Length: 235
Image (cartoon, rainbow, N blue to C red; front, side):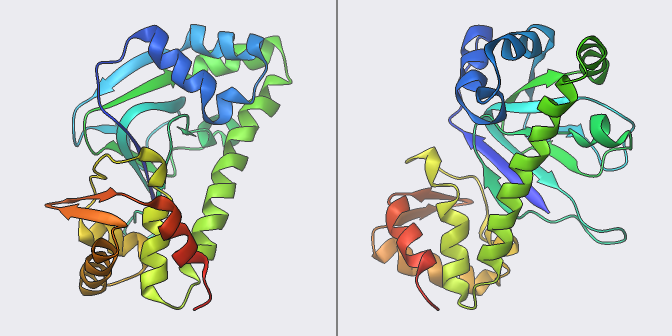
């Protein structure tokens, strides 16, 4: 599996990064005192395109929250090649498995473009949990947000029509607005369980309808609502 987290690129200041995470995703649902403690203990990190955040099988580590840029999360069952399946939003967090299960990384996180992340080290998570055992409940909620996203991905992949699967992939990234989504047709095909030829044909039809605009190695989503309606129609 692979999740891509995307947002417009810019130089991020610490206060702006914290505001993004306070207003989006898992951390936005937590009490203010918990938010402040997580951010106080976290480190703002910048990654170059292609840089590995953490790899499959790596030793225990903390959690990362997406501030801006695009990162892919790749995973698969044992003895299978990791695959990309989803595009997430600012405020998405990953890496909670080390804290919850005390096992090595089961996914790979890699920057697709220049990316800013907030990193909360595992030892800081442990200190918070030692001071207040209920903190484990807060961190456990991260996995539930990721499960919810995975349920939608599975539902979308069960559609018979490849055009609707492709539309679902693009619609899930519609929150980025009219900014290029830096995914190739092959990557979109992997996410949609479709061939490159099917993706190429679908994108041409979507472009003719005014729903997307295509360019080299990227797609710009112009009408996410139309993609949503089309993707949810009966096959």
